[in-house]
Length: 108
Image (cartoon, rainbow, N blue to C red):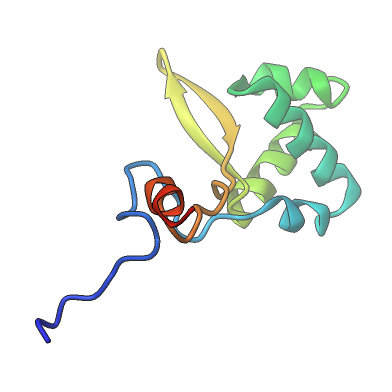
């Protein structure tokens, strides 16, 4: 044998793909207020601190605590947009099929 095996995963990992990441099931295991914040952020995309603060009823300290907690747990990441911090969810992508579609097509 040549020592080469088959890669059943459909290829190597792509850039930007999270190896560990949290799933939606992990989100459902969070406290209710954190779940609601994550779900809201998923619908919004990238959000500024001011947007998070407004979403939380203009409570600056609560917004900061929530973001710090979700960042520490790995559900949210902070990025800079035009020099200003913005936040977005960081969840694992859906698992890839074990075999690429062209192999399934050939097996039909």
